Length: 438
Image 1 (cartoon, rainbow, N blue to C red):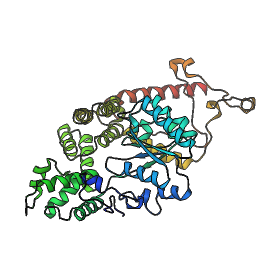
Image 2: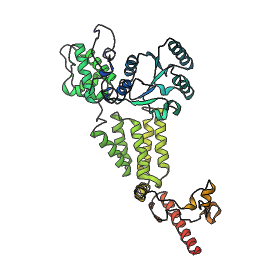
Image 3: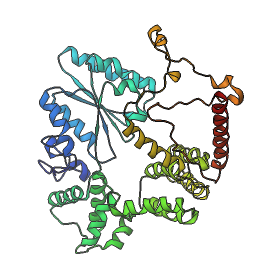
Image 4: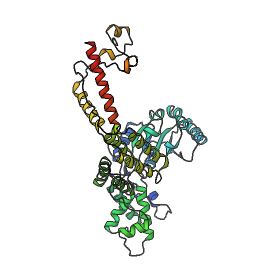
């Protein structure tokens, strides 16, 4: 793995933050993103092709998005024009576009870097489209949010999304080693405290270097900090577990099983453990949604509604206020009636679909938009259920070669008890009408 920051050509006397002094000077000095800037990385390939095009950089803070955009401008001989969507509006966009047009008339291109691009509204995002299409700008947008949800389809169709990964522990350790080389002294930490600082950075290279600066400022001559003292100095705790390793999966598994086992207190305990460790709350929210559909299903149809609402509430409120919505959802799911009938039915249906091949549905339920299809019997004999007694025709909808199948078996708990009654009633009607037809 290459390094995130390089020590090349730095002025030690410059009053700049350590993270700024350690910025890479070339793309191949960027670390933790080999899938983008390594010898066979996506950006490396684009540069070799001679055409980069507009890009969206998606990833967490401190992973090099701004640095890579700046270096990319140098590699492509474009003028780097930065702006932040937080502080910019329509007037700023118009000024940037007009400036880029002026440069273009002299043969000079512009790389417009927009940080937090997801903060722009739809109208502002639409304003980029014509200047992207006519080549006035090469857009590089940076976002910490999923572009599929936060950016409009028109812009995404004109830009390629590149994903920046959180820095792993090896990359953070290399950053700290580079920082020590530049400062000419070791971090005053014992081995355990050093590992704790690496984990405190939580995949953020900028945070790691900021923490290192805090440690150097706080240390007296000859002093070495242990893990406890480190936490006192920087007022930050190391995560209880590494989110990419075993602890991450152990605790989410524990949360899932306590919800399934209808123990709201245990569910709250593991939820709190994960949040306290710095787990991404939206990861937890996604798993709560999964629990709602896998373990509760139609025994309580509101479970999915509650889980989704908790995700939206967290999105709206953020941390820490939004965490209460996740706790409420966990309690609701743990205390809801349980059924995996829908989950089991779906797996069975999927298995049958894979083995059945491309069997043709019966022609009675196929539309006949052309005369030829009408002449071939498409739609012939279809009974419109709303015109039938009890709004139920009892027709056979299965491919003839497959025959009628039964996947879904509702349980005698919660709302599924009512569903079972309906299915039994419809089956009785189906049998009655089949006998009548005979």
